[in-house]
Image (cartoon, rainbow, N blue to C red):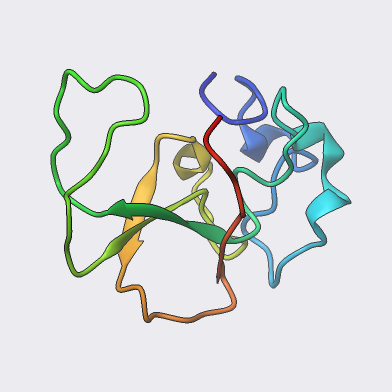
Length: 115
């Protein structure tokens, strides 16, 4: 899948993701954009902090859930936020980074657990 909701570009169907808007939307406002597991807003709405420290390069052998650096100054953000205007960046593979102390209304988090 190119996007969490499938292979359809959210720029061609605004029901799939929250981006290029003026603010966030309720998490359940775009049910057509849910992942196959029913998870909403994996792309768009707010950037999501992940546990990985940011690094420029991953080990190419790590094809599933590659881990970043052991430590660092910045953490990885995924999912792009409501203010972003580029749909290509709504891909699940797109990532950015910020210092963990950074706070903004376009950054959030999702509580999850490895199974």
